[in-house]
Length: 211
Ligand SMILES: N[C@@H](CCC(=O)N[C@@H](CS)C(=O)NCC(=O)O)C(=O)O
Figure 1 (cartoon, protein in one colour):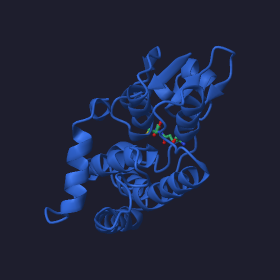
Figure 2 (cartoon, rainbow, N blue to C red; figure 1 turned 30 degrees about the vertical axis):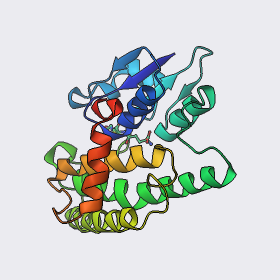
Figure 3 (cartoon, rainbow, N blue to C red; figure 1 turned 90 degrees about the vertical axis):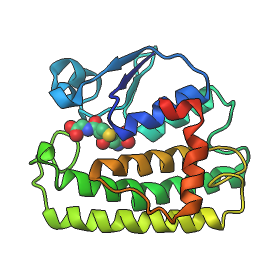
Figure 4 (spheres, helix red, strand yellow; figure 1 turned 30 degrees about the horizontal axis):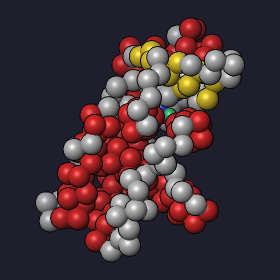
């Protein structure tokens, strides 16, 4: 098995956090996105989408979506559970993951990729060239601010120990990564979003937060 990673990128970070939470040891190769290594012939042969993460399995298959990789690791190593213990928890965590991707991750990605010079003509990841749309960058920033407020409100009113269940789950991992990812567009939650800051601080202490 081999995990293809890049330290600065949020999508492979999900997998890194899962690996640490589950105490796994998976051989890892860094693909330096800053140097364009995702477009090398060698990496294209692994993942034709030219994105990280990717997980190449001993049987020859390659998984190229971060969530699919995390769910594969969950099935293969169920403890501690990160995607829920029963039907309802699994559904609730999946629901939160989907909302976090749409309202949080995409907001930050939209802001970053439509404004940073590094992403000129690469406003979407992958092999196609797409021009930046500055208005989308601005909208992404607004959506990120709205995401922080909503997340804070949800944490204030949460009915579980963590975001979506009494166990620390994939929803916490994803939300944590998104809030951190927003630093790349120079946005952080306002100081008075106390529930959000407390929840972030409790994750900061986990070993996986350093991954
Ligand atoms: N669908 C993918 C998205 C992966 C993705 O967008 N990866 C980014 C890093 S976070 C990437 O590889 N970007 C390469 C590029 O922009 O050329 C997943 O979640 O696994």
